[in-house]
Image (cartoon, rainbow over all chains, first blue to last red; front, side, top):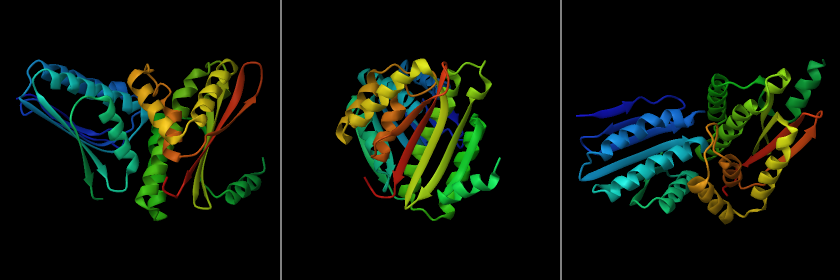
Length: 126
Length: 181
């Protein structure tokens, strides 16, 4: 039962990826100076998962903040999910945003427009 | 050095925090923490707090990433300045750093380009750079300025002051209003 998980810090989100269950959760802040380094293990885990996918894959993203340096890495993660979706696993990305956070909703919509995977925008009360 | 003069200027501009020196990752962590606490103590509404925090992250990481662009031979050039103030319900974040003269035109035209765009055009431009643009190891590959313009809903004010035949001093002045966009 492989799992990739990492605790959150003031600049990086917590990540919990249950490869056997097909559930990925990213939660917290993503504002590291070096995002590529931070996201590499997750991208690698997604590659391993792509070789042995579950029938459905649920992705929960609940970010409080993210910087532009992370935005490209998050896109890379979503691109991996796009190809996983194409190759036999039904992927859903649940994009959470706080009620008063229009910027976070817009950011989710930006990804939704670029990535060919079903997105659900989920409002969270503060 | 007239410290009272500095104090007086900071007081009149209602500066909440300012720093001059080398920008490190640890420094940014502390500054962001301090500003977060300050805004909470000032009982700023969450919407404003989030907006200011986001903008602050972009501005300060911009400084952090671009200090490397100036060669180490010039020691003073690795130092930068920023101030965070609040006047008339508006937060103002001003950053200043050295930039090589040869990079001035490129940066200026990027900011001018961003300043020409409407809200909708900025959204499209952001998505285009995000999905097609090359990502530099350091930063957002040009996303930073677009993001600042989108989040603040304001034009980016800037200035370049030529110091000598090698470097100029670049000032960026970002305003975050309390009003919803």
